[in-house]
Length: 254
Ligand code: AMP
Image 1 (cartoon, rainbow, N blue to C red):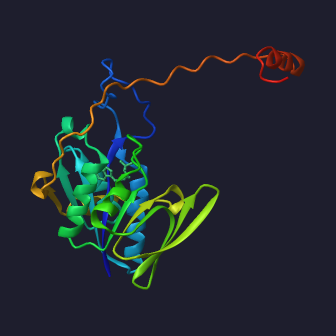
Image 2: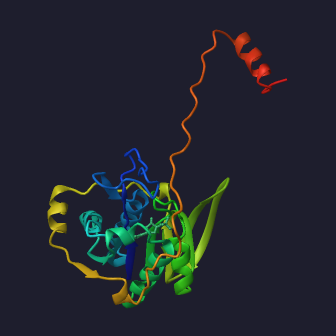
Image 3: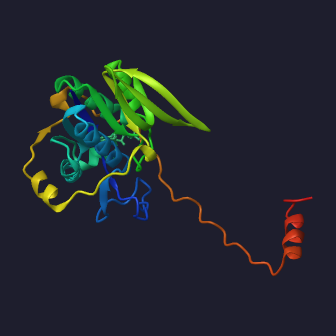
C-alpha cells in the first residue's frame, strides 16, 4: 500500500472579489476570506478515495505558508487525511514564495516521509502558476501525470487519463509518481461535523524550509500588480438593421 503526500495551499477564496493594493505591490489579503485551493480539495478527495480502495495506507497533507495555513491542513484532515505537515513561512515571505521553492520542499518531504505518490492541484488559483507538479517530478526524477481526470492503480504503477486540448490522453506511469488533479477528477466531499472534530486531534508537524535545507529567498521581484482594464459599457440597439449598420460602421462586417 502506498503513502500519499498531498499539497494543500491556502489561497484567497474563489468567490472573493480581488482588490489590488493602492501601492500596486500585490493584492489585499488582510481581512479577506481564505480557503483551501479548490484543485487541492480535489487532490485530497482522490487520496481519500485511494485509501478507501485500500490502495493508500496513509495520507499526509502538506501546506507551505503562514500560521493560518494550518486551517487548510485541518480541512484536509477533516476530509480524511491522516496527518499534516505545516512548513511555516512568515506571511511577508509567503507572498513571494514560488513553485520552485514549494517543489523543493515537497520533494524533500517526499523523500523524508518515504511516500510513493504525490498529488497536488493542477494550479493554485491565486498565482495560476501551474508549475509545482512538474517541478516536483523533475526534482525527484519521478514520472508526472498532470491534469488528471482519472487515476487508477494498475499493477505497481498508475493508469491515468489527462485532459488535453480537444481530447483525453491515457498514460501508464511507474510508481513512485507525481500527479496533478484537474476539475473533473472527482467531486470533493464536505467535511462532516464529527470528522471536523476528529481532525482536531490529528497531528500536525511544524517545520521550516531551513529545517529541510531549502532556501526560500525570492528569485523574482514584483514590479507592479494592476487591476484589469474596466470593461466599456455596451450599447443597446433597437433592431437588427441598426445592429448591422453599426457593425458595418465599425468595420466588423462588410
Ligand atoms: P502552482 O504550481 O503554484 O499553480 O500550484 C500547483 C499545486 O501545487 C497546488 O494546487 C498545490 O497542490 C501545490 N502547492 C502550490 N503551492 C503550495 C503551498 N504553498 N503549499 C502546499 N501546496 C502548494
